[in-house]
Amino acid sequence: MTQPLGTFVILGASGDLTYRLLMPAIYRLYAHGHWSWNVVGYAPDAWDTAAFRAHIKEGVHAFVPEFQESVWTSFQDLITFSSGELEPEGCRRLQRKVGDSPAVFYLALPPTLFGTAAVALGEAGLANPAAQRRLVVEKPFGHDEASASALRETLHRYWQESQIYRIDHFLGKETAQNLLVFRLTNRFLASIWDREHIRSVQITYAETLGLEGRWQYYEKAGALRDMLQNHLMQLLTLVAMDPPAVWTADTLHNHKTEVLRAVRPIPPDLVKGQASRGQYVAGVVEGQAVPGYRQEPHVAPDSCTETFAALKLWIDSWRWHGVPFYLRSGKRLSHDYAEVAIELKEVPRGLFGAGLNNWLIFRMKPDERIDMVVWAKEPGLTLTPRRRILSTPYRREDEIEYSAYEQLLLAVLQGDRTPFPRYDEVEEAWRIVDPVLRAWENGDPEEYAAGSDGPPGQATLMEPRMSWRRIGETDEATQQEDV
Ligand code: BG6
Image 1: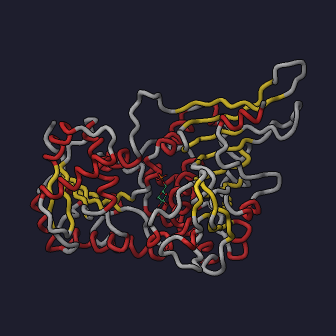
Image 2 (image 1 turned 45 degrees about the vertical axis):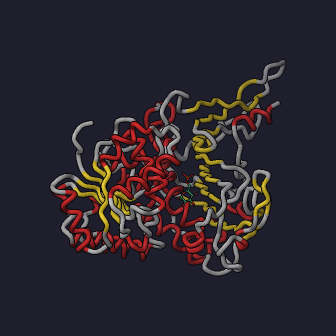
Image 3 (image 1 turned 90 degrees about the vertical axis):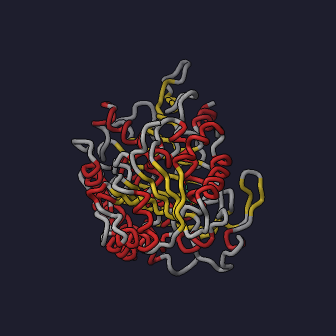
């Protein structure tokens, strides 16, 4: 192993995120020869390095199926622990660990502590941009536009925007990255990627999981904040942005921001027509009876938190004027299923039938693949079109699968800001959803049974002669429709 290139400091090192996600991801990167930085765990716990290593080893063992003792033995030499609070005095001790080397400070902390930690590091003299110091901030970045702006102000006291890496783990997913690669390398898409040819875009992220013990966060967040404001809005930008002329982080962020700026604001009187919310009641998910949201432990019995949210957005740009973008996500739905589906318009004059639209589907779950819905002649004596699916997975069986966190951690080490939303993207996304959040402060979400496809009211968002795609509509399922 080469000399460590820098120091990766995790603040909140005794927490769940470090244990379940960060350290397993770092271990895997190391095992595949991509990680050579020192790792310093920082937390108030009275641990020493040996105790920290033992704790981390347990997590890596549990979450990395291909764990190897021999790899761990050399990997653990990179890891040390420093005990301290989120105040400048404690953080100054980190200075000794970091020295003059490049350093990343990862805030694996509750969002209420992001500002405190960033300021403490700054006051301890650890934020010097000339020394290649980077700050990684987990989600959520604020809970509305005003709080996001306040957090930005706090971070910017010591950190420049170019030093800040905001995690949106969807941008580390293969499908998100492939949206860019597929769109921007295939000539046949270049001339049809606009309002002349595309009829609608549907982005669905459906989960069978429920609350998973996250009531404290989720009760205050809800599906719109948890999934749409960040993850799905980011996917929308990747679909809708103009192709950048050069591949630099700032150019990419400019293009993404331009899309979000062009999203038509939703005034209070249009919220009902452009947004739908639901909350699951008891039902059956994958054969298992599950309680309703309000019966989940610790959830208020009259909670108004939405566990399903859908939006219809209009992008007022030359490229997209008049094309509806539908976004939806929910918990305890019928299938674990996610896709970005692009619907093309019909041919100008359908000689062999009507309603024969093509779809290009970037599927994220259950497996990652591209499906193209096309129409081909049904074998036989008539000229009858039949729906077929051209389908390909991205990955061969023998190829390594890197998780979103692995992708993003590596990007941070490399100083590559492309897969991290810049502040203006976050701000614009809040601007879009804030009026809906305000409208939803009162009243109850519509009920939907756990295990269903969400609240029936989502259908009201659809433009005439459009409908939501079925959740779980895999190529196998649609192929069966044909027979
Ligand atoms: C997280 C949300 O950001 O994304 C969770 O807080 C959600 O509620 C998760 O379940 C979905 O992402 P993934 O990658 O776990 O499917």
